[in-house]
Image (tube, rainbow, N blue to C red; front, side, top):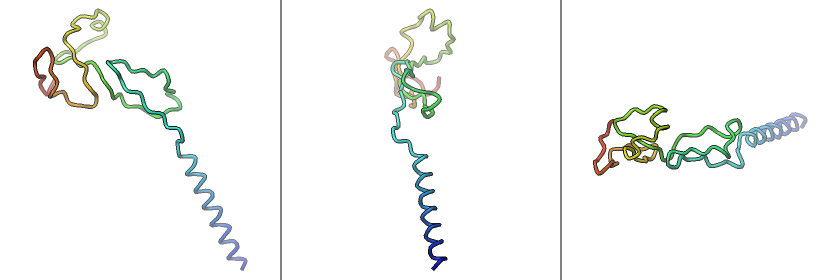
Length: 105
């Protein structure tokens, strides 16, 4: 009889511990990760210390066959030489100035 009571108590404690562990790993209010929109990634409502890691998915400027540096963006040159492309995606079907873009570049 005593062994049966100890076994039942052990099982109850084990189930309780497993339930508590499960509850601590569940996120009850999962926030939707932000997406880039026309090259802007708004993280104003995202706590980088508390919220999960995010992917840089969304709509980004794509400059075909060009390598840009920070000075190019400050001067706003070549504003007609880009498209907004969805990430992740490939750009084989995108067009720039009426021309289909190659798969590289």
